[in-house]
Structure formats: C-alpha cells, structure tokens
Image (cartoon, rainbow, N blue to C red):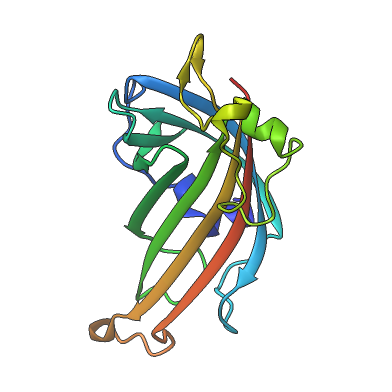
Length: 197
C-alpha cells in the first residue's frame, strides 16, 4: 500500500458503494494533485506523509444545485455547493497499519474547493489563486460568471482548494494499551484539480 493511502482516508473509505452516480447534474470529473502545505503539530503520525500525491474525483449535484456529492471510484460522500465552493466532510474510524493496535483512530477529512468556470479560469491565467478562496473574479459586465449549468453541461474547468486530514488517537485502556497516547495530528494540503470530462 502506498504511504499516502494510509493517511488520506477518503481514498480508502466512503459511504455505501453505489452502482450508479448520485445526483442529477454532472459537475465534472477532475484529476487532482495535493501538496502538503502545513503540519499543524510537532507530532508526526505513525505513517509516512507524502509531499504530494494525485487522485481523481467527481462532483455531482442535485437539481437544487446545493446538495451534492464527491465520488471516488465506487464510493461517495455528501457535499454542499454555495454557487462557487464545494464543501465535503467525511468522518470515520480507521486503524492504521503501524502503531498501537488498541487505539481508536478517528479521522475527519474536510475537502473544500472553489470550482472555477471557464471565464474565471481564463481571468486567472489558468492558475489557482494563491489563496484558493480569495481573489476569484466575478464580473457580469465582462461575462465572468461563477460555475453554473450551461449548454452542453456544467461550466467548471478547474478546482482550487484545500484538503485537511485530522487524526485523533484515543487509547483503549480496558485493553491495556500503554503505548498509545491521546493525541491529535492535523495536516492541510493545497489541492488543485483539472477537469477531465
């Protein structure tokens, strides 16, 4: 198993498998790259942490264009769309390959990206802004609109944002786990996605 797969749990875990895509509106399949931007504690988890890693994911929306999903392979997780930003939180218990076996590990992953329309992407020179959720242009007079349904699909060509992985370890004292210490480790990743289809 690759090191990043042990850390980024949304690549391993999800809601119930589905044979069909959820939602009614296809917002795009994106090829993502994630790069470490911050280690918020001086502690390191028991697994190797990569500097960067790729993944792919699909965004789907219900007809109200608010409720949505992030789909990875055959798993999905709920998301919310505010007209510019897609926000998805997933929480699960997970046992890592190394470390104390008698220790509960709760993982909370927060994926938040700003979807950029073609006009917004062009106005930004085909790059994500330095701060993913700031400086995104909207100017109706210049025909720069946020992502939205358009002829032939949904107008979103790039995704810029963050992925935060927060791991909380809690010892199971009834099982005599002396090596496991209660701790919380959080990592933040800068995440950029290019729409494939």
